[in-house]
Amino acid sequence: MLEVRLFATFREGRDKILFMEHKPGMTGYDIITPLAIPEEEIAIFLVDGRHSRLNTVLEDGSVLALFPPVGGG
Amino acid sequence: MLKQQERYKRNYKTISLEQQQILAQSMITVIGCGGLGGFIIEGLARSGVGKLRLVDFDTFDVSNLNRQLFSTEKTVDASKLEQAVARVHAVNSTVQAEAVEMMADRDNLPQLVGDSSIVIDAVDSIEVKIWLEQICNRMNIPLIYGAIGGSYGQMAVSLPDVPVVSTLYRNGQKHGIEKMLGNPYYTSCVVGGMMVKLAFDVLFDADYETGGFYYIDLDSYMINFISTKGDMTNEKEQKTD
Image (cartoon, rainbow over all chains, first blue to last red):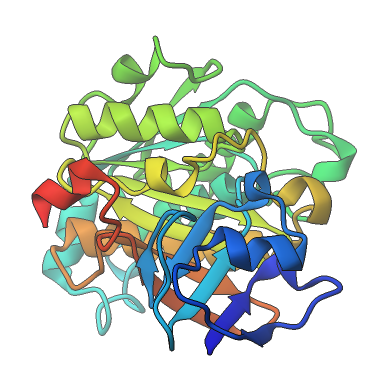
């Protein structure tokens, strides 16, 4: 099982935390596709608290976090 | 006549006399005198940072009144920079404020940030934030990065060995969630205040985190530090680990 935590605008119309079944070879792309989050809207993708790329192969039990960009001043 | 020796009396139990002297001897450049910049400049002036270099090119708009500290109904259309300098002088006449009216870009930033003890990023352009980090890293000047949007904020200390800003925007986005959520008062105020604290901790060589960023979620009243060091795809960071 994978735990997916969504932040800021990614929570709109979605749960803050959701769980997905883990399948061998799965990457971040297999997470964002069913959530309908476009890759270009993601600024930060954390795998177990580590800043990662979406093509990272995920291990069972991982906790993922997705953040949109923040750029105001 | 003001009793200047009592000015920092309420600081001393938290900011020591020695640290107060460090502030007095410091020169901080703040790029941007708007939402974050207003609260940051106010804090630096009240705290007694000896010299400030303030940079902005813009004028106040009616839509700035919800949060930008130096904007009032009378200063709509006035220069943000002029209002910032006037405020510094009004609050603390012992602080020198140098005003530089220009839009920061890749060409003029090296000159703008030169001879600063610390540079503070209070701009609203992701492109300029990235340039600012590249230039401060190259010139070996600590950068306090900050960004806000809606109830969310990010801030970090960027040092030459541990750049942060470039990793946060590597997907090439030109804007963030602020375009959708706007910028309310409380986020500008909280993140601006925290960036002042972070700048002081760098000057005092106190405890603060590097190699990542602080994420502030005011909807959940939560602050987390998120490391970007573990990113094995970023060769530059990997080498420094």
